[in-house]
Length: 445
Image 1 (spheres, rainbow, N blue to C red):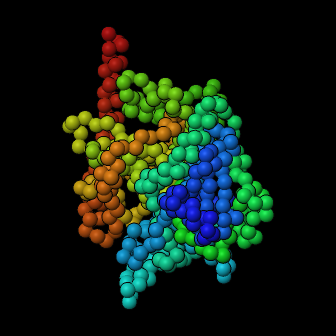
Image 2: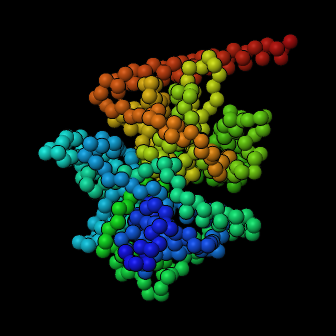
């Protein structure tokens, strides 16, 4: 690090991860100078630093896209914590492109080798099959060891004050100017020097200063990958998404079932007698959702969202339905904006190698019918609870196949599923039939 960089050390933020133009993650520090944000790559020359100007952001969408390129520093997977990595989980892994070119990209865990989950001479020999989401190996699979895998931390666990202050300045400017143009993130970057772009960077962007990969920082986000369609459920979801878009563009065909469902959601979560869609901070868009039954009544939306982000590293919104006193459980919804995120969530929640349960042992009830698509309201923000540390307690956990906890959870899940089936497929049809018969008798009179 140069003398100038050392002098500035006291003024910069703590280390965090940043996704550069090559989609790899690098350790950086941030420094705010007026209305400019300096992104300084750790262990790289000062010439590779990037400067982001407030003037370069066109709208709120560009601000949020920029925010997603930052996250807390990921941590190296340790021998004793190898069981924390499960199928469907998003991790940050090392990808050696050359002898002196090692970069870190996001990848999804496709499988974990259970036959060698043991410590030999103090070292873990676990192997993980990863599906790369970014970089030159995107879409391909690689088997790596524990030494090449980093765990992604939740976005909610760390708040970078320097970044937040810069984004607040940008938002205030946009609010004053009331811009409505499309995001132009690339225009907010300009070079410190004209010819400082290293030749080894994977990025070909002509306007962004990039860090050399001859030295590798600790790296380890909210991915924006597009996962391959692996089963018929994804195909069905894709078809439903296409039909939803078609219905949205042709209102003469009438309301779709998805639209009706989101209307029901608005009624379920209505507060103060007003539809959520009436608030200005809600915008109508296509949303992917998953319904989860048999949740603990005291589970908070923040805890549910944190659980998803902790295991998958994807942005989402969580909603917990209100319940009345005599109900023993409640249901919740996870809302997503992208189809590949819904694919990841489906893989994670429907994995047969484990069951998701509460700390008390109550299993989540989920099947393929719980996943759907709707056009409706989607909040643009969610308030974070003040007692965040208490909310982040281990209220949700995975119990793996072959353990006594798994067997108990499986029996409980079967019991609750049978109860729900009895209501939906026996009692409800009978109620509707009796109601129809009674209404017909009243009409005759």
